[in-house]
Image 1 (cartoon, helix red, strand yellow):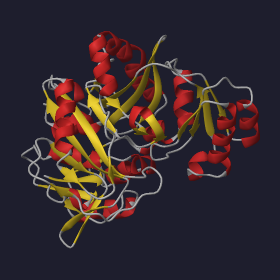
Image 2: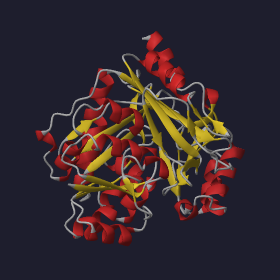
Image 3: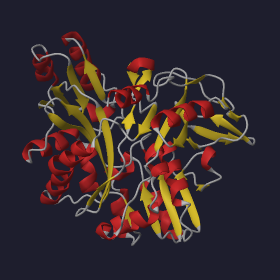
Image 4: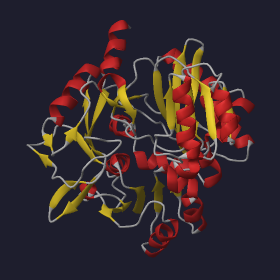
Length: 423
């Protein structure tokens, strides 16, 4: 069995490490992968958005199964192109991937099918958007319609900030064409929860919950990033809330997509806010989250490849998906200055053996040395019997890793541990 995993970050590294546990898999290719995952997969220098080259490689190398992990190739139709050549895939087709590809689509879907979410307005005219924020209640949330590397959401505490955000997105085009339209929505309060779910369009199997830490700096300060660390499970996500989410959000979303002729098969990510009025959807993603994947998959007991095949073949109900009752913590080590300007090209060194997983995101091999090559460089994940032990262990292990200009938050898991104490 030969497999390709499209993508090149920490999420893909976590997926590959999990897939390697299946003994029927002979070869895993990462397209493009990165220098830090070369021990786990053969990296091929094909960009994740180069759909034609991906399909050509898959056909020429007799690929039996493809996992398309990032949002861009999913939204561009990589699964459609591979499927057309007879290659089974894990991931939604282009019509279903729009649930992340367009925030306008997803918000309108939720309104149409009464799925709880924040109140909102949509604007494609900048003057109308600016007029609206002059009187909108603050804080207010401004979102670019399209994909923006997880950074297209701006929380504005004043109307001046809101006006600046609208201009930054729609006039300055910091997110390119993704900013042609904006969603302006009410600011919700409450704990955030990430729930990744396997679905074949008929059955929904939520994975273990997690808590992301988006802000660049300690105490949830600084700019939004792609994620600076995660813990799982999320202590705010109680069995009662899980039942409500299944009944009010998860199943209704899958049914809504079916009704729209956009059946979703793959990993459907629910970004939730547990508000005083109940759980509401902040966002959908059409794929595994990053870095949520780095804490969720190490807790998965069931064979990941068997699940992915079952999703592809629409027989997910035949699989019993089980997770460990342990806890996990992932701390992201980044280049200082991320998510803005940062230097790269520094050697990554590990002092001794790690008692846990190191998932490489932004790195390359040069003259036999592993060098930093991105903003989020790597994540260290530790698993333990309880959350505090997992957090403590992750921080012990990350001290073994070093490179010049390294930065990581010192408070990953702090909010979760406070919630455990209050429970």
